[in-house]
Length: 440
Image 1 (cartoon, rainbow, N blue to C red):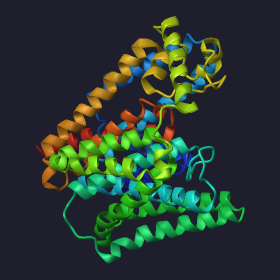
Image 2 (tube, one colour; image 1 turned 45 degrees about the vertical axis):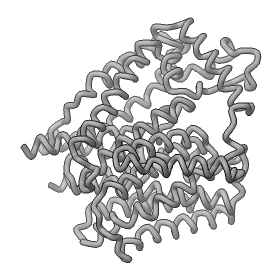
Image 3 (cartoon, rainbow, N blue to C red; image 1 turned 120 degrees about the vertical axis):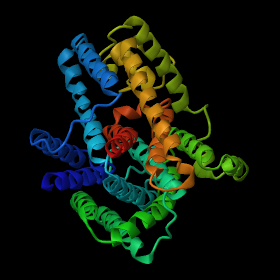
Image 4 (cartoon, rainbow, N blue to C red; image 1 turned 180 degrees about the horizontal axis):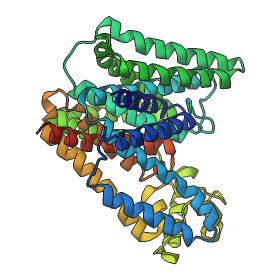
């Protein structure tokens, strides 16, 4: 029982730090895997077998084969080490199979997402992150990672509001979100004063510890936090997403919102259409300046995609090798391309096909289709339109769809933070199925 509670606390801290720090979240992942291994050895847990096992194994094996056939196998295998993140999927399936634990782990992710979004907003308006060349990245290293994670957090928070229990948030529930935002304000102030690194590290550590404590708490106030947290997270995350000026994240968020609208009340989709129309009529500068396909970035994407297709045609079986696009791009670059070097191809499907060949692309699609189908199946089975405990299925479905939609214009699965959030979402429907099977 002690190991089980330690497992929950570690996963909650991991979920909270995904939007904040690669180092912290991956360190917690290693600790969580060690605890799970101890539980499996003591027969206190059962390793979760899922329909995703075969596509994941195929993708992993083919990635390693592609790395072996790369021009620089050592460098390619070094990049392939990101495959260990898939351990998070199995870890989350095991922990999230308990209803209360699932609610608390996802609330921990919202805590981290709120901190990320809050800092992005402060960076945008007070720290000078207000141009395309300098966009808010929050606690993360790049604005694309920050916007991708914020997109996922926004959708899971909306799903909680739309499909979760109809409990009215109590005043005590807003204390924890207020504390998180106060901490973020302190980080922003410290950054402006030149002490941002130390303040950021302290904030990440404090938030991880806070998420673990909340997940393990037996206090009734925790339920109040679960009801209030999404109500605070939605407006802050939406504000941060607009401030990010990241079109791929906007596309993904819109796709996720449309799916949630279809699940909750299809007739209300006119609100989404009305919002789009309002943007087109009012033309807010922060949005309309990015609603174009004639800018240099869009043109460069077109030519890099052409180069990516050439890479696939040249090596259709094993591809160029994981992590080899930067080194190989100059050989395939079209003369019209704006930038001479590209670390990736700004498209998940093309990136994987160019790196790992067409079989690697087939395995990725297999994984994505099975994950989306499982999430949709749990949504329909849970009857989430009536509200209740099935809201994580709706949030996971919308979050996965958003990540895959945004990935048509960005290699977001190459960001460890986005990949980890994606794996957390992927685990939710299989955890629900496991819980149901255990209760039968």
